Length: 196
Image (cartoon, rainbow, N blue to C red; front, side):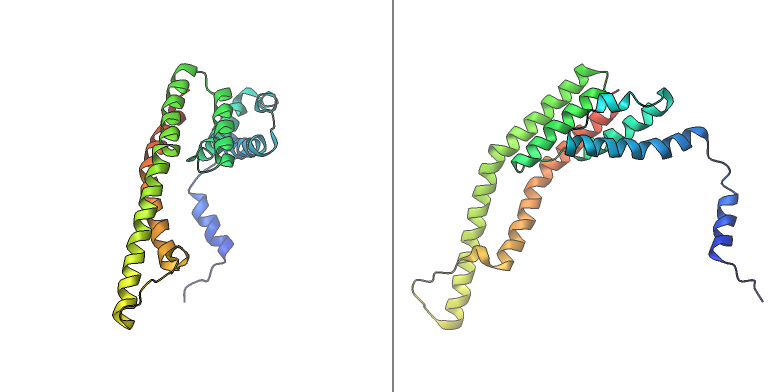
């Protein structure tokens, strides 16, 4: 009969072959989460990143910065409202404190700014046009369905915008429209990540 092992024994067997963690791994595990916390405090409470970073030893700083950069990059999003616009600016200002290649950083920021401007200007017009088109399409289909069921009904005043089917279709369409901007923004965020 096979021996029954506890979960702890199984875990010990699996980790026995892994060996000891390197000093670099220990530093990463300890300081990247600290950097993430600092970035969140910076974004939400206005914490001074430069001052906080000065409290860390040199070998720990690079991991604190990596953790903070990850959080700042995640917080750069399409400017759908004023709060997002404000958070974008703050996240981009925070990244500026960590990067030494300011010229490359500013070039990518210009590209991101172009995406944001296009999204808020031409993108807004496009979203309005698509919304009105979708609304007209739903109204037409609803009118046809009602006339098929009940015959000619004359003036039919139903607000299709309140229908769950319309809302679902609009959300899918909106996600599709935004996806092109998100893809481009993600490419620029990868560029930001690679800048030293």
